[in-house]
Image 1 (cartoon, rainbow, N blue to C red):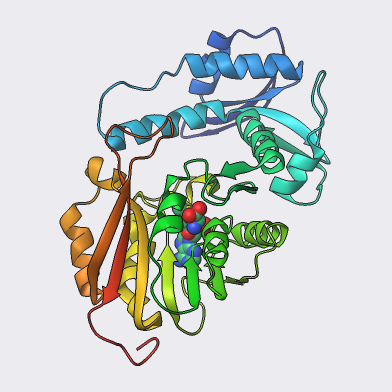
Image 2: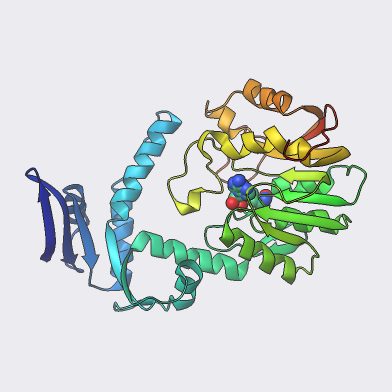
Length: 346
Ligand SMILES: C[S@@+](CC[C@H](N)C(=O)[O-])C[C@H]1O[C@@H](n2cnc3c(N)ncnc32)[C@H](O)[C@@H]1O
């Protein structure tokens, strides 16, 4: 084991890179990380995976505590696990028994760019995302597969899509899908016969992903990279915003976490300016934030009221996926304007 680099400030060790190999024990690796070291792995790739798993087992999730306690623990766990790095040269792992990850890395990181050290944990996520993109996720409401890209919200919990497939349509031919992600809801709206569907997202990766999915499904929709709304008005505006109102900590979190519910607030605050007279807003929202005591139901109803919206109906579904909380409910809120607004952006 060879220390490569160390830096000190005011007598405190801040950072130390140590080269390690198959001879290290998980307990020693954990001690080194806890003392501030980053570990560069130069052994066998499969053994590095074993070490990562052994480190993970030494950092079990706390059984109790608040959402914030658990999130703090999770952030520390991720920090520790991300301290085990493996080498990539032009997207090739230069270790024994390593898989070919060039396509997966190109999808996540872009064109090869020489040497870089990446956390093994992140690299396994990149590989998993590539496999999911290849395989796709079967969405019963669409009867087809959707292929998520790296860091784009994957509809593995797709009961909410059933709500969009089953809800009675308002009159009219145009729809916006705000925050389209993979393009799934835009595809369902188009298949339901809406003649003009515009899908937006502010994440360029989601835009590329939606474009690919909608092309594959031969869905005729316009895709626009923008913050919230495209120009014009629609008869139906659908939005499934990130549902947990706390700041995201990673790129992968961004489709699920949204600091202070900013997107939800901005969406509800201005959506009626983008609605045709007689149109409807379909807001899809899990009550998880309420169950975690991060938002109260009254706050949501107040956001409807402040946005000039009234509830025209609601359909609920209980998510079946394995990570759903007991009793968690996802709702499609049908909202209508309490009065027509004549100026867009006004
Ligand atoms: C929970 S995901 C839903 C994705 C997709 N509509 C679905 O139902 O599978 C939320 C999406 O909103 C997008 N988003 C977040 N803030 C946005 C904003 N200000 N404008 C447009 N899209 C946004 C995210 O990039 C993400 O794709």
